[in-house]
Structures are given as C-alpha cells and as structure tokens.
Image (cartoon, rainbow, N blue to C red):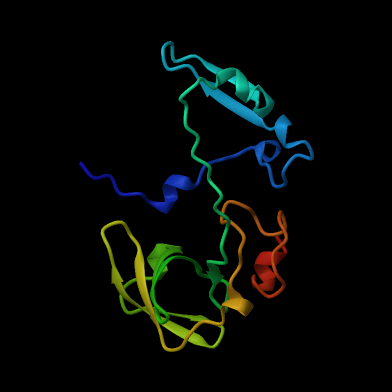
Length: 166
C-alpha cells in the first residue's frame, strides 16, 4: 500500500516554547528522546547522556544537511512554492500552497519569471515550467516553511511585505 504524503499532514499546532529557532550555546545540553526497544519506554534525556547508550559495534549516521534556498512566494504573496527538485533550469517539481489555486494551466509570477503548471502527480507535486530562469539570489529564501516570517533571519526581498509583517 502506498500512502501519499500531503503538505496538510505537516500542519499541526506546536507550542511556541517548543520551537528551537536557535541552537543552544551548550549543544550537549540539547534534549534527546530515548526509546527503549525492549519495553517501549520513552525517556527524555540530554545529548551529553548519549555515551550511556552507545555499545561496541553501534553505528552512527550523521545528518549534515542544510536548508537550501528553495522557498519562493509569488509576486503578490498569495502562493508559496517549495522547490523539491530542479528537473532542468526552467522545469521544477514543487509543493505549493494553497494547492487549489495551482491547477493545471494556472500561472504564477516569481520576479520576472512566469511559470505554468504543466502537471500534477499523484502525491500533489506540481510541475511548473518557467518562461525564464528564476532569479534565485533575489527571490529564494533559505528559511524552512516550519518557521513563521520574522522568527529566523530571512534575506531582505525574500518575502512579500504583507507576509513579513506577521
């Protein structure tokens, strides 16, 4: 069975005090959740406690990914576009919000570039073809969609004024 991932699945209430918008000065004080496989018990510990759980032969997989500038807004601020994949410089696979405004054939302007929705896959991704390359330096934001405007620094010009005043 294949379950589609929908962007609405990632919209949920999250108390302001639980959002870490900056790393702690002492990174070892970061919280760590430990799930004991044998009992299912969950503990809340700190990263400095990690050595207590490491056994000989354990492997670590490190995630060194960064947020890339892949979030765009239409010129009027009504459409959010998160570029998932660049198929070629003019054709992007994207998540959009709100999806109901971005049906087949609909257009969206990002700076000087105008894109047209050429396809929608079964997971809801839009395939948008632009008439010219989007000026990423000017219009892309490296902010994660998780954060509200103003919570983290966003390059000037990356968000329309009406969204920046949240």
